[in-house]
Amino acid sequence: MENGAAKPVIVAIDGPSGTGKSSTSKAVAAQLGLSYLDTGAQYRAITWWMVTSGIDIEDPTAIAAVAGKPEIISGTDPAGPTITVDGTDVSGPIRTQEVTSKVSAVSAVPEVRARITELQRSLATSAERGIVVEGRDIGTTVLPDADLKIFLTASPEARAARRSGELKGADVNATREALIKRDAADSSRKTSPLAKADDAVEVDTTELTLTQVIECVVTLVEEKRAAK
Ligand SMILES: Nc1ncnc2c1ncn2[C@@H]1O[C@H](COP(=O)(O)OP(=O)(O)O)[C@@H](O)[C@H]1O
Ligand SMILES: Nc1ccn([C@@H]2O[C@H](COP(=O)(O)OP(=O)(O)O)[C@@H](O)[C@H]2O)c(=O)n1
Image (cartoon, rainbow, N blue to C red):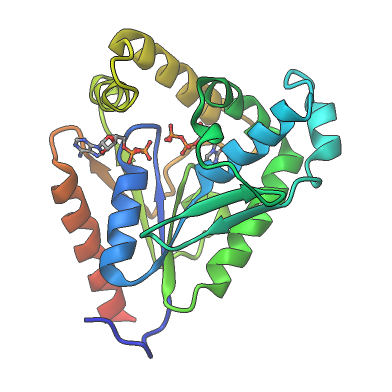
């Protein structure tokens, strides 16, 4: 059970799109009384701001010049995570197709990563009971000293089926191609690419139910906590 005096535990969950990072991280954090941070939402939020501010997404220098401007605030309660940009709730607008198709280009810009990484570290250190942070480079770059690192994978077919299920009727093949393209961009960028940390536990979720993945991660966190 929860112990208020327990040392905070830091959990990093990385992996490509549709592997179950958000659903797993939120549930694990809720079950264990930890905070939860969706770092993809932060990259989506800064991308939304760039798009609505008329910044040319094809121009990394233009993106870098304004990367420090928007104020991005993440609420880390797993029961109701929030995200605002300059005080505006952007939790809906950051999920549009337009933002999804542009986020890899914006998040590849080193100045954007430096800015967002700073926010992530600050939220992780201030989480009193600990935090589950999910993204692409959490175990490798953002929180290399995390107590537990998980790398989720799943076949492109399973990931596309999950995503198109969410997008209500979206074509599975088109979704699959878009996912593969985004993974390739995220994995090949120079700064902090999507990668499994050497000390991460890899969990292939293709044949697992979400409940099984959650149970697996909760068990791993509890083992780490017991050993602390
Ligand atoms: N193991 C699983 N089996 C079936 N569906 C899953 C599984 N894990 C996640 N999902 C579903 O797949 C979709 C994408 O999951 P999500 O957690 O958003 O992935 P990610 O954050 O890695 O992109 C969600 O609708 C979620 O409910
Ligand atoms: N730690 C992170 C998290 C996300 N991202 C970027 O943000 C995008 C959106 O992340 P996301 O987690 O919301 O994506 P989905 O898994 O929901 O499709 C990714 O495709 C990456 O380009 C990143 O660069 N580093």
